[in-house]
Length: 184
Image (cartoon, rainbow, N blue to C red; front, side, top):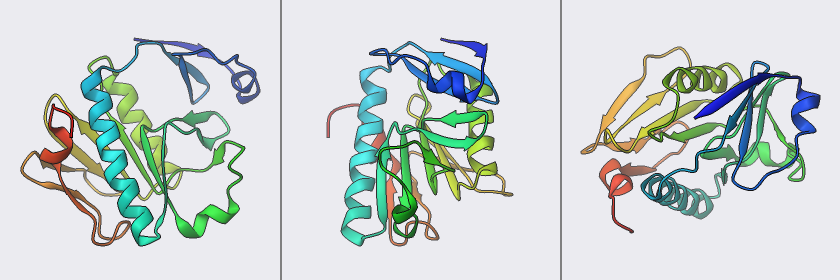
């Protein structure tokens, strides 16, 4: 579960780091997430992240990160489970500071305890801040929603693939491969 407290970006930046606690700032609301994801969530996230990172590296497309802070606006800092940043944007990013702006692709892997309203808001925040796409993967429902600015979300089921030819040319990953409950 998450609790919310109103605060500024400066107050957010002054928060002490605590092991096992992750903070996000959503339109001034501090969201403290204390529940750790389950093994299945982590398998899905890690599998998708590894496959995407290998593809991006092999094709020199940019960088894939996991759980990295993105400052989307003065009162919004989000931490996508997985993010892709195009190679042409990397020289302008200081790796020792929070990334300004949205990733090109933000990926959220949904846990049973995630707040559905916050997922909708988070997706809107990524897209408003310049993300070219957001993938929201629902492991338990065995499907994914693919969002693009100004378009209706596409629903992908287990027998379909995760892809986006505009952002990740030639990348195509069967969703069933990501959602397998056993180690890959």
